[in-house]
Amino acid sequence: MTQPPFLPFALPDIGEAEIAEVVDTLRSGWVTTGPKAARFERAFAQFLGDPGGDQALHCIAVNSATAGLHLAAEALGIGPGDEVVTTTHTFTATAEVVRYLGADVRLVDIDPATLNIDPAAVEAAITPRTKAIMPVHFAGLAADMDAIHALAARHGLPVIEDAAHALPTTCGGRLVGTLPSAATVFSFYANKTITTGEGGMLVTRDAQLAARAKLMRLHGMNRDAFDRFTAKVPSWYYEIVAPGYKYNLTDIAAALGLQQLPRAEAFRARREAIAAAYDAAFAGLPVVLPPRPPARDGAGDVHAWHLYVLRLADDAPITRDALIEQLFASGIGCSVHYIPLHLHPYWRDRYGLQPGQFPHSQRAYERMLSLPLYSRMTDDDVQRVAQAVRGALGAAPR
Ligand SMILES: *Cc1c(COP(=O)(O)O)cnc(C)c1O
Image (tube, rainbow, N blue to C red):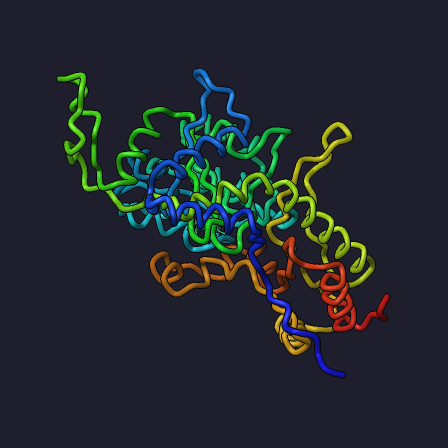
């Protein structure tokens, strides 16, 4: 029997509407940041239910979430001598932006039940040098933001949410992006819940933070300065007021975003259905199923289901590495989220970190794999993955 074609770990869901919108941009003559980037920012604010007024959400389109995290940290004035607390169980982008600014990272462990940053560990890591807290909504499940905002308020610290996995996610019934954090940053990288190829969105209610981030997004170039002296700014005039970056989102990318955003909830619903099918297929096997949002008044929060992270139990008949190898041999791609930062040479050596310092992240890492979870998967694809995992765990097909 010939094997079915390789099933990749992730695939973007790009339809004719996205293609037409990009073609329209190409024909328009305006390919870099312009009207579509501005429209995408407004659409994003609307998607989050922007209340306007003094609670208005400023949405700042950038060319990656990494750029957005960097801009947020820069706007908060983080620099040499400062520390930022974040989870070891994340992608390096979360932490590297702190080093761009010459500040230092304090990595902490996760809650083994949710795989999210442990608020008690955050509090224990706070020193007089701490300047911000950066939680990550791992896999699309909201971190314990009530606890994090409470301790941040106690210590007078701003929170920057890495929401790269969290579109759309709710926390206490409110969409991530609208919580009382200094800034929240979403990613539209190719494998994220919606994509612009490369791209991100920095969201904040803080008008000053927004102004600084917008300035630094494009070379530190200020066009408003002239306003103070004359009603009319000549089209050619600008002032450079800081050594800014080149972090603007192109209209070609924004065109994709304009057509992806209205599909975000349908994508999420499909991923949730796939996650439920996996859960059903793996019930009773020696595995730990992905955590669910805690129930609240009968209704749970929304999980974005960016990732389906399965963990092997102690009595599983196969190692994680062997399971991944076996899945690849049957033509199924999978991944691991994440190799914790404390195991990477750069972070390990800079801070002299040991695996035993982060026992929950370490243990989860050694037993976890991420299965394919994307809207383009057919029901047959889902069953193919489910049966391959069941088979590898010694269970009969069903
Ligand atoms: C993808 C990702 C990022 C970086 O996003 P980019 O848009 O690729 O810069 C940051 N943090 C986490 C947790 C991610 O998964």
